[in-house]
Image (cartoon, rainbow, N blue to C red):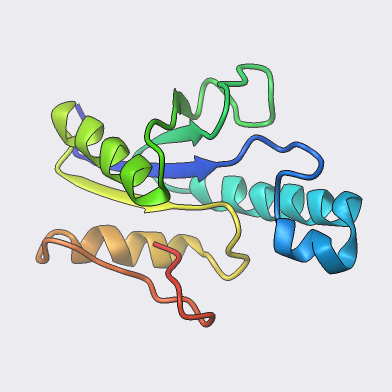
Length: 140
C-alpha cells in the first residue's frame, strides 16, 4: 500500500449550487462554467502526482464523470460542516493506513504539481501543513 493520499473535495456541479457568491454577480451559468474550468485544472494537476487519489463528492458519487475511475477512487463526503466532512475524510484515510494525507478543493487555479510535491515532502518532517490563500482562507 502507498503511504501518500491526495483527497480532493468536489462539489457536484449543479447550476445554482457552485460558486454561489460569484453567481450573484456573474450569473449561475458563468459561475458553473468557471467551476468546471477550475475543477479541470485541479484534475490535471492531481494526475501528475504518484500518490493515491480520491475524490470526495458533496452529494452523490458520479462514476461516469470526468474524474477517471482508473485514476481516482471515489467517496462521498459525510458530516454537516466543512470541518466535519474534512475530519471524516482524514480519519477514514488514516484508518486505511495512509501516513501522509493532503486535502484540497477544486477552486485554486494557482495549484501546481510542485506545491503538492512540496506538501507531501513537508509531511515527512511535520505533523501538518497548511497552504494559505490570498483571500485569508487556505487551499491545502
